[in-house]
Image (cartoon, rainbow, N blue to C red; front, side):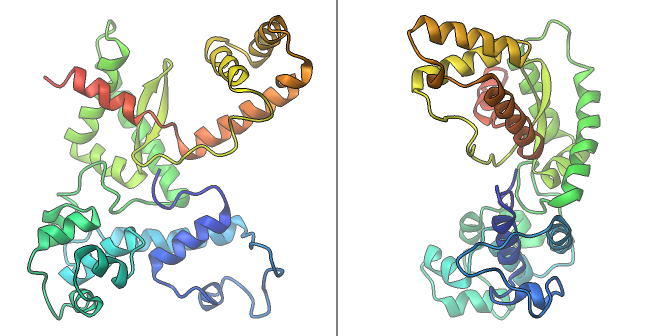
Length: 305
């Protein structure tokens, strides 16, 4: 969904820390989230409770909201955009071929970049936003102002209702590419919808006759595909899962096809393994959405005129 979405709480907390510009050592204690004597065991990554992650998410959202305010200075916008990219002043300086000291002075409003458009390009933000601020010039797909945590899921629900309203206006005979293109244009062309989509980190699209959340910045799949079987078996699994209405029916079809190829029971998933896989996939979709960006892009190209 966004640059903050990761697979482990440790990775999520680290992304929050970088965005907030907090020092690595002791920043949780500095914010009152850990006791003075609390520390992870040596050699192990810390595991953070949901309450702590959500408390940090609220701090991230405060800064995200600040990115949308019209009274920010150029220096503040440069710092915010830098932090969204998880850049340091050194990183941005190297990307632009200038000194770290000059980038620092930009951030403190002591100097103004000679080529603001180039800075905006390096930071992945609209030139007009970097120049004047405010949220009016931020497109639906911008990462500036994206929310995290519970607020992000609340925005998804709000966007879902908006999407249903637009979907009700689609002709009954419309095919999938038309529907995808229609919803994509609606997200970008309706200001209120674009704002919610940007803050939510994605939009709702139709896939396999249902609405799914499609993040602008999709997170790669992790541990939800291959197990201990071949590519040929994996292809069978993917095909049957997409065509069958139930997990049990899919497993039966997989079993029949694999046995017909002369494979033993250990060469394809057991029924319980397939159920667990579906549970993991559904949990992933609920949290991170589905990556159908290329499919939507092709749909828009078909119905561009």
